Each structure stands twice: as structure tokens, then as C-alpha cells.
Image (cartoon, protein in one colour):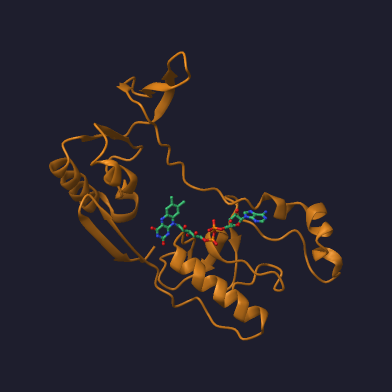
Length: 204
Ligand SMILES: Cc1cc2nc3c(=O)[nH]c(=O)nc-3n(C[C@H](O)[C@H](O)[C@H](O)COP(=O)(O)OP(=O)(O)OC[C@H]3O[C@@H](n4cnc5c(N)ncnc54)[C@H](O)[C@@H]3O)c2cc1C
């Protein structure tokens, strides 16, 4: 959405293909998502949405330059540039590999249980001081699943740089045995899309 918004002045036309019915609805809900979408469409005649659809195929010319997107709903969209926003997956699978950990000397201590706890989606659960299932191994940032009072489930993965910075600081404090808690942090975020300023402090 941010990319589409910033490309809008120079692109002839932009088509946003989304799985969701409305942009940002997964975070802000249907009402705010619709409001943002209407604002974007109303303001920028060269942006259109193809909601509840996904890219199925890319077609190109003889020089391997992309010329067309085919969607699952069989829409054909002529294009010159395609940008995929695919999200992130934590690169933590190596933590499940005791041989890799052994090469780092982590499992040389007989009292520690290995491998480290990792969720099914690859995130690393930590306590309020950023300690993993091995208290001598700390994790912070996008890969950490943190305990958070502001979260409905009391746990959250927060992919924001401000939180990553804070978690890194707390992990460093814990390493020095000067523990500070992440529990009462309130994650916040702001952005501007098509002139709409979005600022929120989240309860996830
Ligand atoms: C397109 C995009 C836009 C974003 N916009 C915003 C925004 O507007 N505001 C905001 O708050 N947040 C934003 N974020 C999220 C923000 O960038 C992240 O929350 C933040 O960078 C997380 O910091 P981190 O240190 O946990 O991870 P990263 O910044 O991802 O750093 C992890 C580092 O570890 C390295 N690494 C990975 N595996 C290994 C390994 N095995 N060995 C050694 N090194 C390894 C990686 O190469 C990388 O350099 C955005 C993210 C993206 C992708």
C-alpha cells in the first residue's frame, strides 16, 4: 500500500491485488479498511483494487520482460512492473538442528535442554527479559514471540523497528544481569498512505 501510494505520481496505472477484501482490514478491521480504500480510490484515479484475489501466473515477452498478470479469478492485467509483497518468515530453522548449535558450542552445558523452543511458525518464545527456553540464549526483534500485557492473548510477535530496538536493549540488559521487562510495552506504528495519516497504538 505504501509503495503503491508513493509510486502513484509516476505510474500510469497501479493495480493492487490483495487476498483481503479491504486493505489493512487484518489489522484495523473492515470499517477502517474500507475508509482507507475509498480515500485512495477517490483521490487517485490511477489506482484500482482487485480484492479477494491472488496472482496465479506472470506472462512475459520474448525478452523475458513481464507483460501480464493472470489472477486466480482469471483477470488479465497488462503490466510493466510487478512488485510482490510476500511478508516474512523467520529464518530460525537452524535452531532446531542440534548439530549446528553444537558447532557454536551452545550445547556443551549438560544442564541445558536443546534444541531451543521454536513455534510452528518459526518464532522464538521468550520471557519478559528476552530469554529463550535456554536462559543464557537471548532473542529479540521480529523473530521473538514476547509476553505482552497489551495483547489479548498475552503474547505477540511485533514486526516494528521501534520494538526490535527496545527488545535488543532489554536483551543486552539481561545479558548483563540488569533485567528490565518488556511486559508493559505498548507497540505503536504510523504511516501515511495516499495522504491518509495512520497512527495507532496496538492491542493485538
Ligand atoms: C518492506 C518493509 C517495510 C517496513 N516498514 C516498517 C515501518 O515503516 N515501521 C516499522 O516500525 N517497521 C517496519 N518494518 C519492520 C522492521 O523493518 C522490522 O521490524 C525490524 O527491522 C526488525 O529488526 P530485527 O533486527 O528483528 O530484524 P532485521 O532488521 O530483519 O535484521 C535481522 C538481520 O539478521 C540477519 N540474519 C538472518 N539470519 C541470520 C543468520 N543465520 N546469521 C546471521 N545473520 C542473520 C539478516 O540478514 C538481517 O540483517 C518494515 C519491514 C519491511 C520488510
